[in-house]
Image (cartoon, rainbow, N blue to C red; front, side):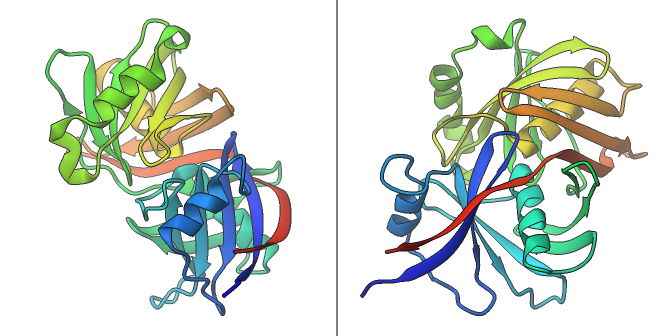
Length: 266
């Protein structure tokens, strides 16, 4: 049986997504159909797919995220900003949107310059790993963070793919892998290998958040406001350190725009 679907394509710093309004008509897509829609040659093309659903908890909406491999996944920071923009185009909520996702409650504020400010979850700890050059942080999705003297020379696909599949991360479904170059006070450059996409993406919101927290913890303890350059654009990360050594009021700011809308048949 053929299935007709209305969709929208959005991007945030080059991290791109297919979005579907599933409040009244849930398309109930299979993993195979999601992989097809995200395929850059035969489908629409995207790093992931999101459905905007009614939230039983009573917020503006629920965000459900799928990676381009077809599997439902954890929080996506760039996706969270994009779905807030999508919700606004659908006439949902006001300038500030409140929504739930896999990691809990989020708040997004639409700024007047085309950017969206997204509240991320609180982070309990930054875990140092053996060797002194890498850390693990959960920012809504799992992230392995590693220093890079020259991030543009890193073999992100090769090294990132190997780390992503390490046995110690199997129980989490693997990990995202971030390579971080510190270019100055509050200034970072980050490249990310994303699980589920199984490739480098142009930006990763939860990844740049993890990177900023690690740099604060290890190198710049007096800086809580970072500008992060990715291959797809500039993102901002701002936060407050808690008395217990964790982080609260974590905000991710960056662009979120509609690329096009359309209809397709599965």
